[in-house]
Image (cartoon, rainbow, N blue to C red; front, side, top):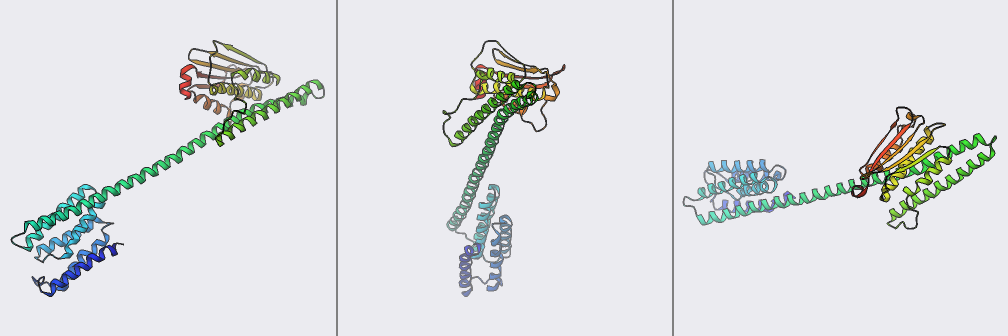
Length: 385
């Protein structure tokens, strides 16, 4: 591409030099046609690297032209290579370099006009200067436009990267939400079914009636787990398809805590449920968080508390926060989450969405305690939003 671009310039310079050489107007100071052609090669060849090394090319061409002026050699059309090199500097380098290249070119123009005649034509010099300035401004404009387009491309690429990152974060958050729901739904109901099945296995010979009731409880728990799984899958499917969820059961909340406690009691774990303070209307998301915390804490007691364990669920409504405590007198430290588990992590993630806090640890005298604090009223709703 550079060769095709420079070809007309080279041809025009060659034809001009040859025509002037025929009438001997260039042959001064012992310089011949071959000398002028060699000078033209020295001035033109560096221009092929003007895009990759504009400053070096401009310095070489300017130095050759200055040495030509010092030697008293007549200015030729090949010396226009200085203007081409100046344009490359103005269009590819910073403004200070462009200004320096423009000043050097103007100085060379002044020296060449002084060499041409002892009585310089100021009008011709002014016209040539205007041409040089126009080329310089064109280079500055090309540089500015190129940087502007590069900035647009960079911003577009950055916006695309940010969009992809936001999509990945949203997908990760959705996976975490689904994992929490699956864990809370499956772990609790399966734990209850396992406890009931173990009890039925022990009682099937000596107390068939107790075994029958345990099997009935397993059947009821399994149906409840299946219904809750269908509801959750239905909600996820309709959200993915952009549909409404009016045809599915609502998420469990505070109203379902009594049913949850009754289910755990039927599994053989004595649970005392206490509520203190004036009940306040909580958002559905916060109610679901309370329900899941109680569900997870009682499930851990069922799995790790051991025989004879008892649990207490306490809810205390305050002016600005809801205090939830779930304690048991089981084996305590055994209820701590195993590496890779999701229960306690899910609790903290749920509560963090509303600006609350969770403390889960073994009690000094034995047993395990989960304490959650959730903001209520306008504070809780603003943080949830």
